[in-house]
Structures are given as structure tokens and as C-alpha cells.
Length: 218
Image (cartoon, rainbow, N blue to C red; front, side):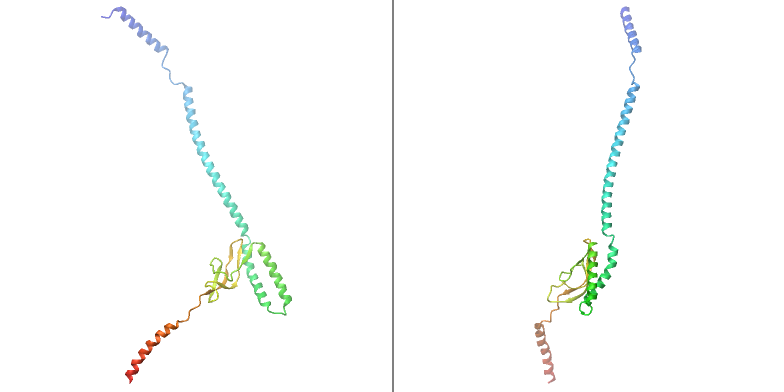
């Protein structure tokens, strides 16, 4: 049996324990700690959003830089080709002047008229060259589809095949680009005459065929 003194001592310890639990309860999370955790969570979300917006901003900036460069290049090309239609319309008149000079140069009674047209032609060409128009030479050069339009092919043995031998209409460059192809006549290899050896080989055959026929007739 447990002595009465021991029972009273145990009861006293239990009483002290209960009193201590009531006076010093287990602390619960304070309101400030909850607010701190909430602020940290919001800060993390804000940082993620900031990183996303920064990435989008960098992408937009790169896209805008590419757009600016393309716009500048398009503007430069637009300036270069602004007078292209005008120059194309002037070219037929330039061709007429060249034909007049070519035909009038053979006559002696139109010297003053010819010289006047020659001055106009020279002045007009200088104006067009200042705008970026330049003629290119074709005669004597190999035929090139990038620069030439072939109107005719003529057999020639004095030049290599596919060589431009005559320029019917001159070609022009505009700002380092082909504006009009030159209309040209191109050489081809001459046709070889039939070999005499072939004719000699054919004659005995015909004689052999005619020989028996005459013998049969006799």
C-alpha cells in the first residue's frame, strides 16, 4: 500500500503541473508572424511577376530594334527607287535620240542639227547618270541572262559561241541593279559541212547497186 504521505506528494505535483499549464499555456502563432509569412509570399509572387515583365520588356525591345532596322532599310530602298518609273519612261526618248544620232551622223548637210541633238543627248545622259542610271556594255561579252535578252542567233566562226556580237537596244543599271536588259544578237557555232569521207563511202555502194542492174539488163 502507498503511504498517505506519498499520495499527498503526488497529488501536490499534479496540482502544480495543472497550475503551471494554466498559467503558461503553449504559445500559438502570433498575428505578426502570420502577417510576415503573408508578406513573404506576396513578395515572392511580385518577384516572379517582375521577372516575367522584364523578360517581356526585353523581347519587345529586341522586336522594336529589328523593326527599326527594317524600316530604315525599306526607307533607303524607297529613296533609291523613287525615280525608277520616271527613268523608265525617259528611256524610249533616249533610244530615239540615239537612233537619230546614228542616222544623222552619216549626213553632211545636217551638221548643226546633229550637233544640237548630240548636246541634248549628252546632257540628258549626264542627268540620268546623276540619278543612278548607267549603261553597260554588251558587245564582245558572253551572253548572260542576268543582263541580256537574245533576239537572234547567228553562226559565226570568228568569235566563241554564245558571244554578244551586236547590241540592238542598250541595257541599263539603276543603283547597281539591272533596270533594263540589253536586247542583243548572239553568236552560235557554225554548221560543219558534210565530211567528204562520208560521200566517198557512199559512192561504192551506189556503184555496186548499179553494177548488177546493168549486168542483168545485158
